[in-house]
Length: 185
Image (cartoon, rainbow, N blue to C red; front, side):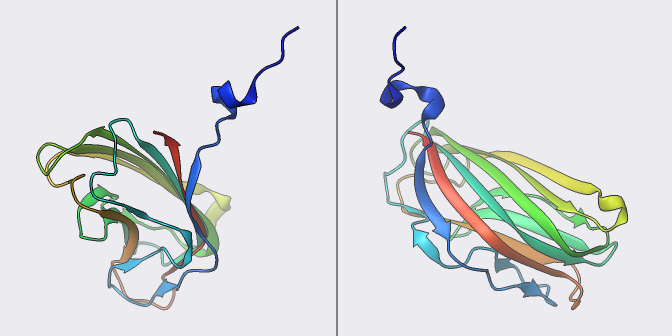
């Protein structure tokens, strides 16, 4: 019986850690301003100009706690620090939730490189949270291809934001874990 070589086993490839949040984020509460869900950590969320290659694939995972008023809306955007939208959940009509867990699970893949109109990135994601009623998970999938404004010839820095539709002390979201890993490339 032959031994499996770990370094050549694609099933054991765990990716390259790029960033890990190392504390609680600042809560986004009682505001309708769009604010970042990412707080300080170790590593980087930036890719230098011309640093992407075709096929580069990334996984971002975020989790924390959320509270929401039944019927109020929340919008999650995945974008670059310069404002290029990679994914937009649109308005999510929230159910009543009081200090309940949420997750955001994202995948990104570079399809082509170049300037705006040439470069393209596919982003797919899922936002889920546990509502109060019956401990039911609600979810909002999102996905898009940006082949108009994405640009691999300039430095890019990832950001994930949240924006409440109504300012209320009962609408709050805060992350306790966030990491970004390169899974291929």
